[in-house]
Image (tube, rainbow, N blue to C red):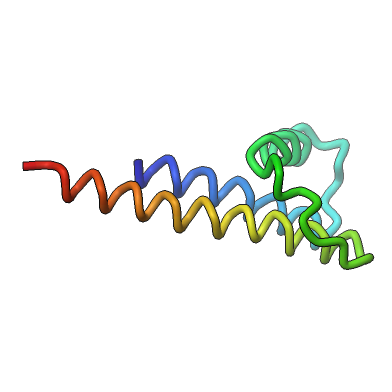
Length: 84
């Protein structure tokens, strides 16, 4: 569970970095991370609309990453608590 959370947060963070540094969207790696991040961020994509596209991605995808991180940590704690 912790590994999955880490991977999801990493995908979102890498996408934020690619957008912030204007990575080549024609590159298949950049494109894959963008598609994966859009899928993982689902309802968080347009929570805030700051006007600057880079800030938009940073805030909304960052929020999604934070929610995944907190939810994942809670899930791990609950599983560990339930284990004998």
